[in-house]
Length: 198
Ligand SMILES: [Zn+2]
Image (cartoon, rainbow, N blue to C red; front, side, top):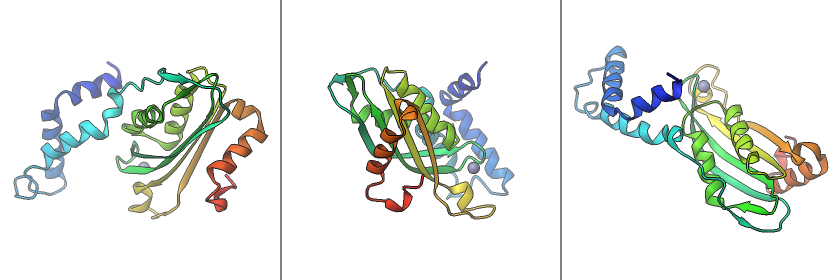
């Protein structure tokens, strides 16, 4: 049984998640039957259906419109994901730039693609890479994906590092042609010149 199948079974059984959360509350030293906590396991089981819903999403990126165009940039796609090391949120913005090959993606499809990979146990580097890999499978000429995120596991524990983590992934013509990449980066960061150094 794969890890994903294990999750799918669990996701079809919110009652089992409820029981586990109740047990966790007890282990943490809480009384799960007190008024404020009595509905918490059920609420969390329901919430997990949503925030881990990426495992069950298909992005349908193959649906696109015919266009002749150069680079297309979808900036500031908001995302929320869960750090797989600590099960705490990391969240921020993703910028997707790509060079189409006769067809373009609808903006909502790109937002759905981000959700597909964000709504699961993740690390930021893999999230960036998975989006780049999937978009490249659609016969485009090149892609540049940037993720900027804050990590609660860095903010609220350990060294309490407050930095913004930026990950970048380029593929195809975007990896090969530095001038094109620089132009696209300049467009993405036009209003944030202090971050051009990425
Ligand atoms: Zn973490």
